[in-house]
Length: 242
Image (tube, rainbow, N blue to C red):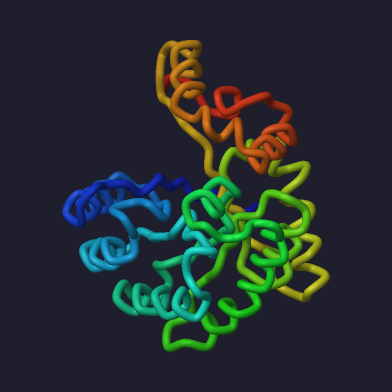
């Protein structure tokens, strides 16, 4: 049976607060922290510091935007963080983000995100393997093309809003088949979902519907939510009491 590891989203507005969260999460027995690209403006510096102030917890990105950073620079940044933290504790997760971010915020063309991401992986993956410190690479893969890319060319995928049904019926079969066809080891699947420990399930889901409403409006997430048989983020959330 595949080992189940439980992590948390990494957060904080300063290096000190990010370090404190990492130390607390490690002490509480969580195995990993996953940082979005906007954490503290750019999470990598704070992650490097947090890694040196902890001993075992894995620190990963979920995810850094590919369009915003040249793949050569991305590999160099990842290698520097991995070297600072130490072997086996840093994982680079990348993804193409979404049309509103890439076109409206970055002012770039989002016409071919699948081809862009595959080309990006073709550059960055070998650099991560051939550096002084090998860095695992995950791709935010929700659709068939990027699941193939993740299986063939990387160490796995890091997801958001893909529930257990979506993982079992859509994600896992495709990424595992692609890895097997390429002669690669079984890929890793990092599944991210909103979680609320709460006595009132209806109240918790209503809050999730409000806080995560934007994800129900983006086409990529709409499709993966549909794969899971749910209509929106509130239904995908994991909610229950202790």
